[in-house]
Amino acid sequence: MKDAYEMYAEAACAGQDDKDKNVRHYLEISVPVEVRPEVKVGRIEAYPCGEPVVMCDECKKKPETCRLVIAQKICVKVPLKYSFRTEAGESFTDCCGCMEDNKS
Image 1: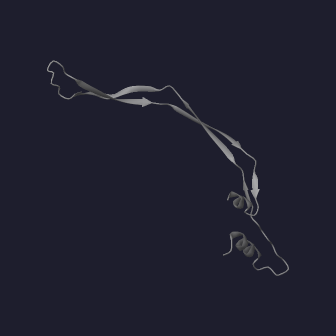
Image 2: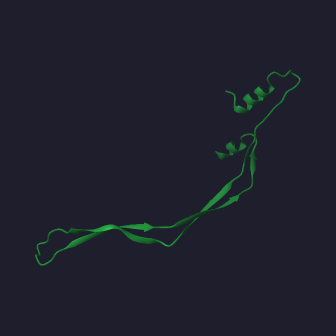
Image 3: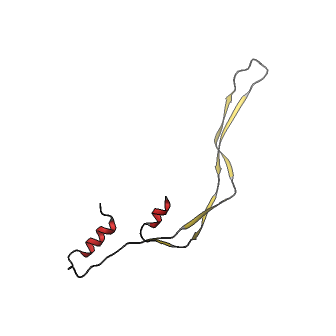
C-alpha cells in the first residue's frame, strides 16, 4: 500500500514527460506548548434556600423528651477566576518519520 507521500508525488508528476520530475515531501513541524491553569477563589458566601423542614426523630420511650431534626437547604456561592499561563518551547521538524521511530 502506498503512503500519502508516494501518492502525492505521483499525482504531482502525472502528465509530465519523462525529462521533468517533481518530487515533493511533507515535513511535520511541531512546537510544544505548555499551559498552566491558575484558579483564584473569591469570597465564598452561603445563604438559606427555602424554608427549614422540621422532622420528628425516632420515638423514644422517654415521655419527658422530644427529639427533632431540622434540615435546611443552603446555596453556596463560590466565585472562581480562571487564568492560564502559556509558554512555547523550541520548534522541531520530523523529516522522515524519525520521531515516530524514536517513540518506541
